[in-house]
Image 1: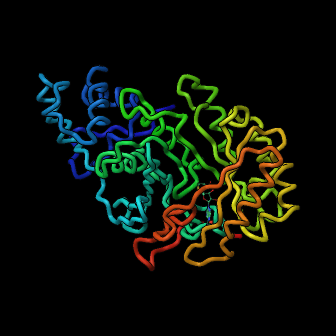
Image 2 (image 1 turned 45 degrees about the vertical axis):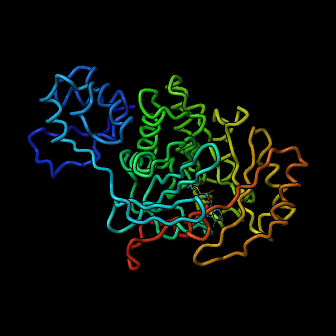
Image 3 (image 1 turned 120 degrees about the vertical axis):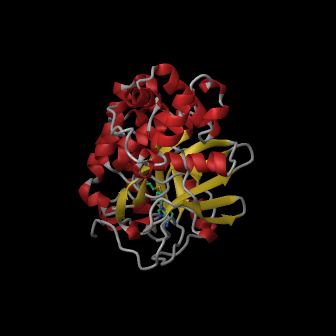
Length: 380
Ligand code: SAH
């Protein structure tokens, strides 16, 4: 991928610098950055990358990798003091923790840490708000304010790992705020950093990216898998928030369907490596009683799935602050599960966690100020 971040003039004042600048760079880009910025060879970029992702802070004076380089240590600490953003709010339900970082005065960037017995899952945001205005989704009501930068995506993970001491962190899901495939450059750079064996060493096979059906992003991701086979992008999981395979119903629930309709979406998925392997593609299907569980809707879902290797994740509707549907009863979810299972589909029901603190699926999206402005939104 091309380098996308400008260099910083070493004479500029530290106030002008992004305190998280270093978190914008994958391993290769950090090496290039160190060469441009300080005329250093790969050794120093390598040492800095290992330092950052093993400690979560800049403490170069005490790092033997930097022995003998006091000048570089003071330049780096002066120019790029790594400050993770403050945690603005924390809310817990059981072990599930929703936190917001101090990244933007107008809007909260929400992240959810879900500890499980053997490992933890982190649900990451990729944008401030979202443009696509899915009718059941809280984030959609905010509109899109802006993309998150690589460093802002990394800050969520670094905060969980180092400030909240989530040491069993294994699964990462881009299912927080925003449409990750619309912010693909920053997303993939952050995935390069997260999966680098010289750093956090998380595995692509434990990372899921969920999309509302943003076809240009699905296609670009497919092309990146081909272009960079050694980066293991093909081992990631792609989630498609399908929710209905009936064009009319889907367009009314998810206005993105008017821009990227189902038949085009199916073609795009068929050309994607994720629909060709066992665990690659997950179809997310919201259970809206009396709407998405009707027999004709199920038939259309089964028709859509033909030719795709995919698993189904049923998501019971979580009523947000302003419910537009009824929450399904457990039996209603189970009934749909049984039908799909009988048809031979591997099907899982996503357990709802963090509902009482609005940390469950689709419930992220509180303004930091109640009268905050709305972002860009696709009108229904
Ligand atoms: N924009 C991406 C990433 C968001 S992931 C996408 O649409 O896939 C959040 C998941 O929760 C999506 O599957 C979304 O459709 C689902 N969701 C949103 N609101 C919900 C709600 N109220 N109840 C249950 N699931 C919801």
